Length: 459
Image 1 (cartoon, helix red, strand yellow):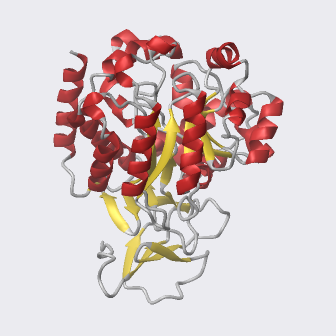
Image 2 (image 1 turned 90 degrees about the horizontal axis):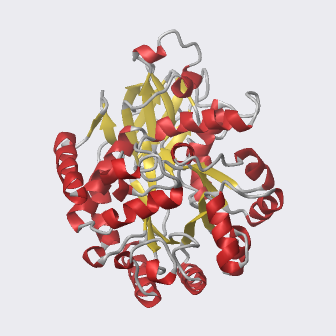
């Protein structure tokens, strides 16, 4: 087996991923006989019975693998990998769950965030996830340069990242949920938002690091900060993100505090726009769904998290029909307790079968949400599908485990039989996982360091 060499060399060899067991392109194009990659891009899809037009330098025999675009996680809180299955927070609703964990998270130190980000990105990469949007909104005094830490860490693992500079300005003294030690003033927040955009955001196609601005939620920031954040994001051409309509308690909070339902509040602060994506988006009524569709807002469906916290089920099909973009997110690994994107695809299919009939949502729908749908949610047009000119981000899964034995449709088996780890993963034409192992990373060391710091955090 041979692999492509660095994109910095004068000659970029072609690589043919040949004769896959099954292919999902996310766009209904025929790639039955594989794809051809040169440098960081896909240059050919090879239809059934066809041969490449390009001269092929290297070949990868994919006959034992299901080939899909790299999965895209549109909402996560990587720092929460340090508080998985934390006993005091078990079996609680969202608000009490947050109130239990905020004092713990307030003690985060730089090395803890580094370890949490490193482990979470590694875990996601091994599950076939090549692009990760992380919502970090905790900036206690010890962690004011959290985004800088995450940028440095992401560069070592190799995922593309959309790092959202989150914020909280309403502490418990102002009627909010978080401790005062975790909130910042509007001025400090906005100045740092501008700094990290200027320092780290890559606006170009094929970007590895992108920034977005992301006040945590309507109950943790002021309306003034929401409005000013929107203005700043649009000045620099970056996207906006927040939690919205996750629980009925949140709806009640917005009505009590602002006299508005969450979506009306969102519109009042200039956030009902196609440069916005929302996490969860569960409790919208029919009229609100139409308004979200007309504005082409993105919705990140978080199946496992919504089940853990008993929040409800996102109305994915209605949102799509209205014109909203729907993608998938793992969400924080304390409300999911895992960071596995291919498992989230299966969860998305199963939970949607509780809202819709079996013939109304399929494994192909779930795979679309996790790939091209998610790319639309975060405003990327260069990833999320297998197509000529797109970035060569992809995952290959073998079906050799006992759980797949007897499966007749390989693509359906990937979802229905519960795939949990990719065999090979590629980001921008470069292999990041081969034979189920992260390239250039000592996973045992990453895990050991992370585990030690997790114990230290909760002491």
